[in-house]
Amino acid sequence: MKSIDIEAKWHKEAVKATGLTKVYPNGTVALKDVSVSVYSDDFCVVIGLSGAGKSSMLRCMNRLIRPTSGHVSLFGEDVTNVNGSQLKQVRRRVGMIFQQFNLVRRLTVLENVLVGRLRFNAGPFSRCMSMLRQFPKQERELAFDCLQQVGIGDLAFRRADALSGGQQQRVAIARALAQEPEVFLADEPIASLDPRSSETVMQILSRIHEEKGIPVMVNLHHIDFAQRYGKRILGMSKGELIFDGTSRDLDAESVSRIYGDKAEEALEELSAA
Ligand SMILES: Nc1ncnc2c1ncn2[C@@H]1O[C@H](COP(=O)(O)OP(=O)(O)OP(=O)(O)O)[C@@H](O)[C@H]1O
Ligand SMILES: [Mg+2]
Image (tube, rainbow, N blue to C red):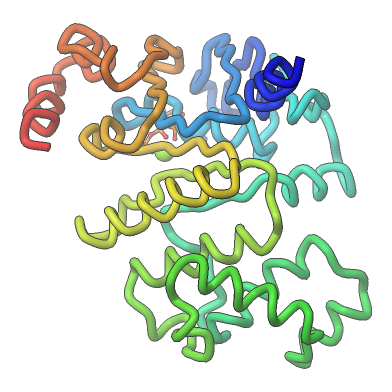
């Protein structure tokens, strides 16, 4: 009986997209009837050519944008049409990581993490105190702990704009961690980083997933990283989901379907990895 409970817990749908279609105001059809679930035990990587619809899918999932049709649910709760405070709750439950880090450059690393947390958890008084840079001890300790988890506790008092790209992305991950999210969605988190920092950032995301059991979905350009880190790989092409399998299932034929006339480059990247 117990094993069934464990199975049920780990195979819960963290994010479920059903029949997602996104048509932008200029008429571009970015997603065409995409249905996919991200499970509690997933570390999945989404690959595809530029313009395939990866970001649009992720943005619909955390409701940065609203799908034109279809549904999104978060741990069983339909969030397709939520607004106001309910939408804020969705954003709190989903840890987002972007290519451009989105830090407040003039604040310290620790303050960036604290401000990120207050954005979701605090009332007006705390927000006012945060403007004066006064944070409760408990909050500071939690933020510091998150920085240590990504290996940059020693940078807590540096200004964010004095860090390298890789370090800034680690601050962004710590900020997302401090919000105690139920799922992580990352849109090209390593696209602006050198290979070494890219490796570190992917290792950190993997470790958070393994140690904390948080499901992760990452959009990536690099197929070699996708193959090495993705427990599950989703392939998109022209707004459709055309591949869903493990990295072992990602054979030359699947790569061709996903990457079209760029398949040769992708296969070279894979064989060099
Ligand atoms: N705000 C927007 N307005 C109009 N069209 C958009 C908008 N955002 C994206 N698109 C278009 O929607 C399609 C899918 O874009 P999307 O950004 O989701 O692709 P992507 O797979 O993330 O690409 P990339 O790898 O370059 O990030 C593309 O044709 C893109 O030009
Ligand atoms: Mg994108």
